[in-house]
Length: 611
Ligand code: AGP
Image 1 (cartoon, rainbow, N blue to C red):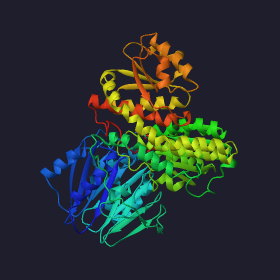
Image 2 (cartoon, helix red, strand yellow):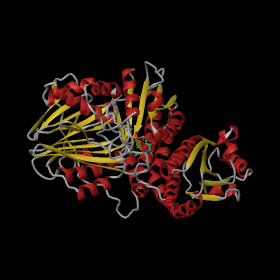
Image 3 (cartoon, helix red, strand yellow):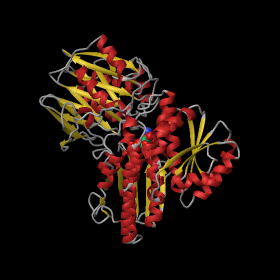
Image 4 (cartoon, rainbow, N blue to C red):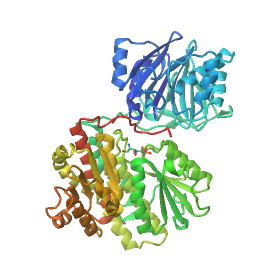
């Protein structure tokens, strides 16, 4: 998951414009960055390890000229995150940037080394540069050299390629990683997404799988994998020029936590008819016949996967629909036995570009299932390949740790479960109105929960000293325990595990001691008594209990918990959406206490577009 930008222009500073684009792409990876430009036909390059600011410092110190260039911000796959391995990579007259993984690069590298090519880096990407330059040496022109090279590559790539001596040429290619063309006035662009080229144009072409393109100042040609010239639609991307700022918040994650009353309200608004308290799914109502769905397979990664785990309870309880949830990277290699009739595959993805989730989608389409996706980016690859999009309207989520996208996903999934229940005759009108009313009340409840932010910040000072933290939840709150643990570990680097409360006594209780905080996510619902018993088992072993519950739950737990977070009372149906907030706030404040990089935690990236 790297970010790439290409600028083919006769005006302006390619370096400055590329930096503006890379700042919009940094969420895709920030291990290193680099820019190469063409100035009077000559290639020049600057690179730096670490954050984009380091590359800016290099450019300030040793500027490069040229109005045409390529840029890259890296999440390391092959080779350490250092300057030497930073893109762009160069071989002879070829400079290129790459997002993806070349799976056969070792064999190609051996062949090229036997031809005398000398490699400088450990990366798979450098192999592509040498491969293209070897085809140039054999007498091919740049376009033919690229076309021949693409046919030899196995794996995933989005490429931007420049050629010394060819001031009016920029070549791009996409296979397994997203790439868009930006159309300017007498200038052209390439980008990993529309946001990257937004400062320069709102006219965008989304290249399709296997496409490659040859750009000139005044136009472009697009070819499919077989080399046939093809036409692709030009989209006008709305308001893409708007940059996302932190405002008065300290971090994007903090801003996005506090945006959740609005982001859930916008998302709910796209599904709920407030007048008659009913659910209408957006998009083509004939895309999915919910009454004929007999099996639901939900597939996702990370936090999005935990959203499917919550939705599993909803689809089974509200719609009476058999559900299987899967982690995408496991699903796609397990050869899952999929029903040839009545199967619906539902994918959840904030970015809509996660490689494993996309591969799982394609597997299900091959198997003939109807497909739907809950996505936050309506122009994303996953959104463009499913039969039905169930949008989340969370807005751009910049913090690598997902917060507002998660609660928006839960709102969309809750609405879909109600729609499925209605279509399957499993939900009567009165029950539908009750559930819709509860869902519509979520934004206000989330806003009310912010009263706990300061108490949680105080609590975080104590809990930030922990070496390990255990999160426990029962029923629909078990996935919230998993999500709470993920939030904590990915931004504070404290080891944390989520467990089903009932599982504690089957082994994990051996971990309990006075050094290990145990967080119970447990509103006073039908399972609360069971959770309270587990809580007392922990306390009896001197475990440090933090109980997140409502007033009734806290009263019943008495003085047993060492720490408490009080949540507003709510309908059990929407409790998992509401109880996402305290685990987000807890992780955030602990990370702030630890001084980690909350918005761009080490080793992570926002969009995992590689396997
Ligand atoms: C969320 O906090 C994580 N950063 C990560 O698990 C993320 O949810 C996962 O990579 C899936 O991303 P997607 O929703 O864009 O597919």
